[in-house]
View (spheres, rainbow, N blue to C red):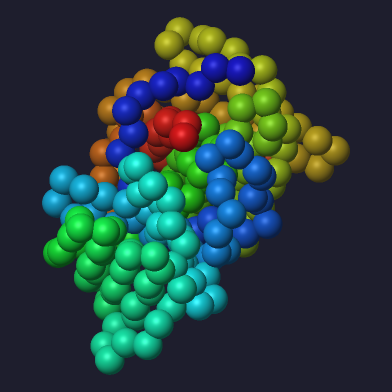
Length: 219
């Protein structure tokens, strides 16, 4: 299988963030809380957090920590072994030993994309009116969540066809038939205002969807 590789802008719908029930293992997964994936940006430093019941996992560029929740007069605070994470609303602070990161901000739009990447998804696309999300895992499955989440179809990932600069995937089972075409061409989502590297067209059981997508860099 080949998927167009282009630098991705990690922006997308929060529609069915994490795609519950579709959580294959990947080499990048580490034990930690099962919950929402969050991306925090602190100037030129950023990190991923995954919050669970009473604890939070921090995926740092050069470290991995699981901190337990402690009492806090304001906001939510976690501590363990010289590390501290505090958040309130969109704001956050992080201490790792002698390093201090202040002015961190939650980027909600990046969460679903980072979550998909950590689940081993190779390509993700989104579209509007009605809202839909497509996730492709090489040599495994293609998941289409359509019509604002009311429709969910999981099909095997086929071999790719290369057609005049486009990648075409055609797959089916006893109930559904889907064709996906990915074109390396600048794509602009007029509703979210975000820019992507690929145009995406999906035909699911005769219904057509149009949107934008990006390849996800593996961990």
